[in-house]
Image (cartoon, rainbow, N blue to C red):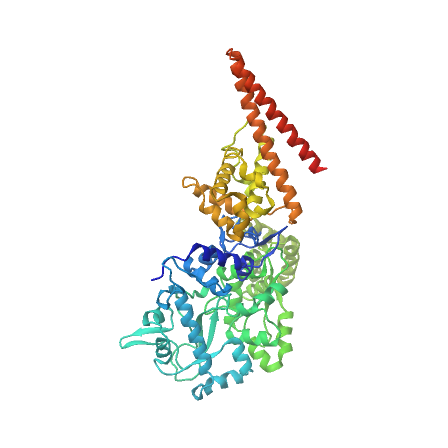
Length: 635
């Protein structure tokens, strides 16, 4: 078995892979100042973006929940792969050949991580199904697609395939490609019977279900014949790759347009997604065998960059009772969005696929454009359950609808919907306003926020030396942290004199620990040669006793925004901040030396006191010279 991947190869992969591109496949990132990108955190629910990425350091950090790391950490935490699997995946992407500590070359197939093996099996299965779609046996599947307006190009665009009717066609094919029975059963491609493994999908049209990166992680299969006694749609079961509540079908194809148009259209089925994309609504996605839930909300919000209320989420549902029930189920999650939410229901009850067949592409586009606000739809659905011709029915309908209207976040919109509700009920506006108003505090109690925490909040009030006023201490702490952020993010901008600073040059205890780690890692001179991996080298150099405390601070320093981005600006800033540290260090040495000289003088040791005063004079002269140079540089 191959050993550990060589560290220099890990560094090479880290250097070549852009973290913003990898993170951007799952999170919409927006510019957040010089050299920084920001988006909604994939690790916790938040309404205001606090997840920050710095491409110059290859690091990310959420200032809300504290999660941080490099591109490999991101993959490990978001996809469940191991560190080695993450490195191997990115190595393939970057074209880096990995070497292992035992001198071996590429990792043998049997040593590839379990997750990657499952992904490979699904990729081969998808290719097999797609190929079988054009076999004589699959005529019934091709006819199904044709009857719904999908030609061969459409099938290929969405990877649609056909699962043969034989019990072991796919299983035999995959085992012939080196995959084990255990891998096929674990991945949900096969099931274990009394006589051995058999194909999970047989005689069905098959859609590959892909994650946001485009990797196939499961399948959805549609019944084609009446003699198939199984359910109409059969999906991959829960596996290490596939969790239906964490997947949206079509997201890999829609993500770019979602980010560009700031719109997501949620439909109910695979063919509806196909119809929407082909008709000119390329932002359509669908859930996979489950209702739209909170996990789906998180996915949509990250794809939209849902923090400014500019986005739109449009739900399309069939006009039948099941569709209306699904719409109201989706409405339960409306308050989790910042984007505006809408419902689009075709008056005749057609889904997008049927509508495209009946009236053409333009009708599908028009359906989405004719959307109605989710609140309006939900209120009308609530009112249908009551007899509004009777006073008792109207009172009960008001009691049922008031919490819905009270849940509208925008006050002006809530007031307008309150007036609309009064008109729908034919009741006095004041009575409806009182009913809605009484529900607002109760609804509001269900909302919560998470305050963010910036790097400037760390370390306050503890581990500091010196007796200056609190404001002065805070200014010194901020200056020290900014200098260390430059050392971590842009070591080429920091003068060599930084490496000559004594170990006690910094006032703040966490800053001194970071300084020690930088010194151990070789100083800024080493940082200039290390590239993106410089932060990782400093992380490894943290002293054992302080590593758990220092590494989070390093992670924050690696992504905190810098006020300038030009080389000249960074160099001037670094020189000024370094000068401040050196001046404060000289001032502390002067104070210590002055106290020593006074003690020697009072003890009658005049010769030693004189030497101390001479040293004190030299330090004062050095400090004045540095101040003069700083003034000239500023001028």
